[in-house]
Length: 215
Length: 281
Image 1 (cartoon, rainbow over the protein chains, first blue to last red):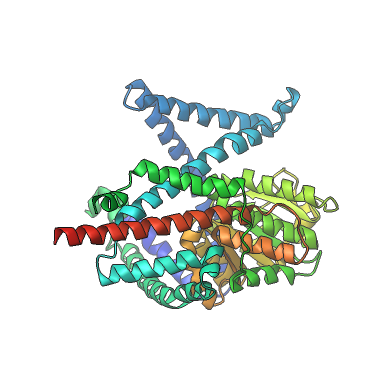
Image 2 (cartoon, chains in turn blue, green):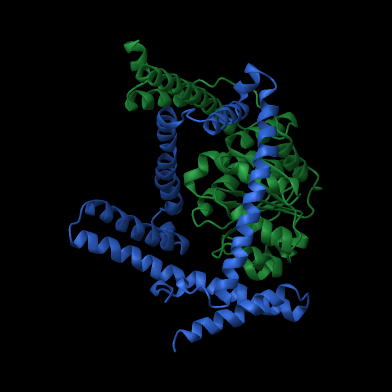
């Protein structure tokens, strides 16, 4: 019985949202703004509460049970609360009274930015190692991929033009013709898939989104 | 033969050291390799450059966090510099909570280079809004409701650059610089629904995904990866619009040497693979 309520809401709102897209009127626009944008934004904001709560609960339990890597959980929790507190005090100009205005920005630019950028930078090392070990011309398809990758890699760096001045043009052609043809085909397929799945959800055929394995 | 095969089984730690050297040395001692400008970068530059000074603003959405900042921040800096140099009003916003600090930093640094520009008149930081594509739709409905204040808390009605913005019709150009697929949301909602003119700056790894949108005209211009930033810096220098250090161009030297090294690794790996196969046969 209680499953019928969310299914009915999805059916009614799904059909109304499709209809409103094809009705160019002020009433249709107002409906869209009120239902979709305002409610959607509210849902986004409220989603922050369980997500932050889940993060705190997960790490709190890990520290309590002294599970592997619990020390990192302490760092996560301290980081979370310090940034919330400093951000709030900075915004309310409380830190300015103790000559620490802009502390939030300083912490962000000097702690968070280098940490996140370094984590991403490590990718270069793994990519180099993986390409050395795994990028092999085992088959015709793999060889074609390898040659195309070489040309694009050379094409995007200034050095490529030194080797042969046509390389940047061949690289651009690879991206604009074969790549685009493949991408367009994939996008059509994905688009049709999204439309089909959406219809299945709206009509109540696909129910896994409610949990319980779709039963 | 055995020593040759050993060359093709290099320890991972040695590979890491070689990559570190290939990245660090050009950053310390830049090679100054010139960057050729692609048509897509030129189109983005032209789209900004065509806007008459002190008319409709550019809306720059810096939708990325510090993880992709080294690749994308030079693009944002270049776009901000271009607008400030030409007195094209620029409104900066972000849909990434980590983007606020980066947007603030970009505006702050660029504004110092152009002392005659005024905050609130030539540029404004609208700040972060939660909601992703809902914010894009909301801007199309009513900008003032979406951003009732700027990031510093001043009412938008009192900030000269924001006062007359109702929706996308009052914005000359939307530029999203993003490290995620949010560019597609901008295309679907800002361009298709509200007919905004859109350009994008993206990471190199995702650049291949956006070529179909260039052909359809849904994207007017595109900057791809560090190279895109370097191209824009080159265009600014060519047009005498900025004399700031060219961070992306310096980064391109490091990327060039790292690419060459990776290509050598792949060649070595393949020679080793074929020699090993022949030995087995």
